Image (cartoon, rainbow, N blue to C red; front, side):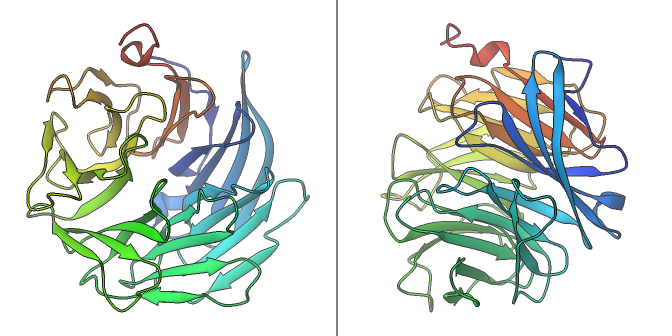
Length: 320
């Protein structure tokens, strides 16, 4: 697809990447030293330009950074999740950071997600300690803690459609749907497969549909109205799927990245095989995102220290 990376995060291995919801060319890249096993982490703020990636700012943290989410209310604010169990709040307009650190989780924070309801300032965090927490940055401590998963929680993310609702994916092989007003139990527990579920995302065009990615290398679709079995299963990856993302522009379009070093695009309304296989990484591909402002454009990052911004042929607006 592309030989030259948009940005090279030297001696930092990419774990997560996110396009700004405000500035079309702006990207946040969360990285760790030594594949996240030891060492520190760095958050890079990058602009994608015709001449390549331009580094605007970098912030260091004392432990690895595993996920990043942009604020939905302030174009300069970001939140990351760290290996020390803390979440960090950064202001890209400030020379140093973080401007706030919130630490309650007892193990790594692997997922952070900012509520897309702009009237709220709520963040959900997912941790290897098996819990999920909700935070309001105006409060010094978490608002609530959600227990129930029997293993590591890899990700938690707000529904873009349903108020007070988020989903979580876990090493206990389930996808769970939660109501923020009921922290004592999940609204729905959906056994996904016989392996760990590493990632999930909500469909942007149907409030009842979610997509999961798991260690058994399958992408599956789920309908909350009939949760007993998947509504589709997409096969092609050869190792664990690290992240899935639903397109903000085409309701049935999905992208996934994997420990098989590839990114794949899918249209679950058309076929169960990938539309395209993108092979420009030489290590695990961990981060993936769609650009809300530029239909078809995606960004990815991996343990090979490379970040690519590109529009796959299969996602060109004319392709569908």
